[in-house]
Image 1 (cartoon, one colour):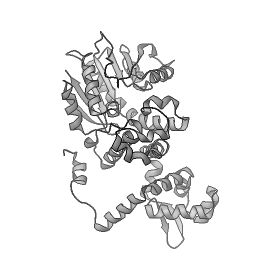
Image 2 (cartoon, one colour; image 1 turned 90 degrees about the horizontal axis):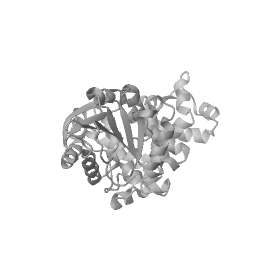
Image 3 (cartoon, one colour; image 1 turned 180 degrees about the horizontal axis):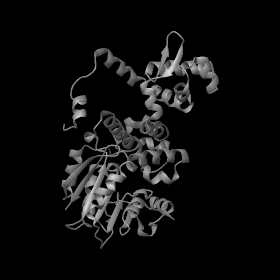
Image 4 (cartoon, rainbow, N blue to C red; image 1 turned 180 degrees about the vertical axis):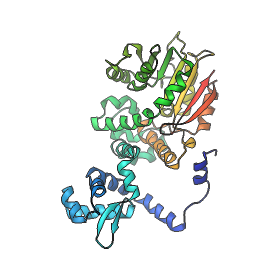
Amino acid sequence: MNLFPELQKKYTRETLSAREAQRLAEFIAFGPAVFQTARIMLKFGIMDMLRDSDGGMTIAEVARKADISEYAAKCLLEASLCIGIVLVNPETDRFTISKTGWFLINDHATRVNINFNHDVNYLGWFNLEESLLEGKPVGLKTLGDWPTVYEGLSSLPPHIRKSWFDFDHFYSDNSFDPALEIVFAGKPRTLLDVGGNTGRWALRCVDYDKDVQVTILDLPQQIGMMQENVKGHPGADRIDGLGINLLDQSVEMPAGCTFEAIWMSQFLDCFSEEQIVSILRRASKVMDAESRLYIMETLWDRQRFEPAALCLTLTSLYFTAIANGNSKMYHSADMERLVSEAGLRVEAIHDGLGQGHSILVVRK
C-alpha cells in the first residue's frame, strides 16, 4: 500500500513493546468510557481549572469548584489519571494536566471532533456492525428517519446540527485560501459548485474574483439553507442555486451548459465508488477541453502526520453507520482509479492544504 513517509513508518511495522500493546488493547476495550471521561472533564471545566491552577488541585478542591460531589470528582480524576490526560503529585495529591490534556483543551480540531462524535455519532455507532453488513446507515435512526443524513441536516436539533457543521466547516474552511489560488489561477468565469452546502465556498469565490458566476448544485433542502445563508452578502447576486439529487443516476448536470471550473469539496467522500463514477461521468458532460474539475478531499494516505490518518479512517465509520452506509474517506489510488473509470484523467495533485486536504486537478 502506497503511503506518505510518516504513515509508512507507523503502519508497516511494529513500534510498540508488548506492555504498550497490552495497554492499548485495554484502552480500546474501555474506549467508550475513555471518551466520555475526557468529554465530561472538558464540559465541567475541570481541565481548564487544572490548567489555570497554581500547583494543581486536590479532589476536594475540584469537587467544590466544579460543583460536583467528591465521589464524582474522584471517579473522573482517577480515570483521567489512568487514561493519561492528568498527572498527580504523589507528595501533595494535587492534580495537573498532562501534555495530552493540553491538546484536549487547546487543539481546536480535537474539540470539534469530540463534539461531532458525541452529538452526531456516539449513539449511532452502536449499530456499526449492522451498517457494515447491510450497507445501510442503520445508526442514522438515532437522529431521524431519512435515507441519508444529508436529507435531514436542516431538521436536526440545533446543537447536533451545529456540531455537524462545525466539523464540516473546520476541515474545509482551513483549506479555502490556498484552494482559491489553485482554482482561480486559470481565471474561470463560470464555476459549478457541486455539493455547495451553505454557500461558504461560493461566497469566498465571488469575493475573490469580481467576475465569476457561481452555480451551486445540491439537494433542494440544502439550496434553501444556502440561499438564506448568502442573502445580503457582497456578490450574492452572482450565486445561483440548483436543487437536484445526484443519487438519482438519471438526473443530469445543467443541460446545455459548459463550466470552466467545477468544484467538488469534501463531496465525493459522501458517495460509494459506483456513485462517484456516475457523478464524474455526468460532470464530464458539462466540461470541454479547457474545463478543469477540482476535487478537494482529505485523502487518508496523503497525510503528513499519523493522527490525521487516524481521524480520517475512523471518520469513514461515521459514513458507514450514520451518513449513508456506503461511502468513506478514500485512498488516493482509489480516487484516481474512479476518475479514470469515468473517462477523465488526473492532471495534477496538490497536497498539504489546510488540515490535510489534497486537490486533484482533473480534465477530459
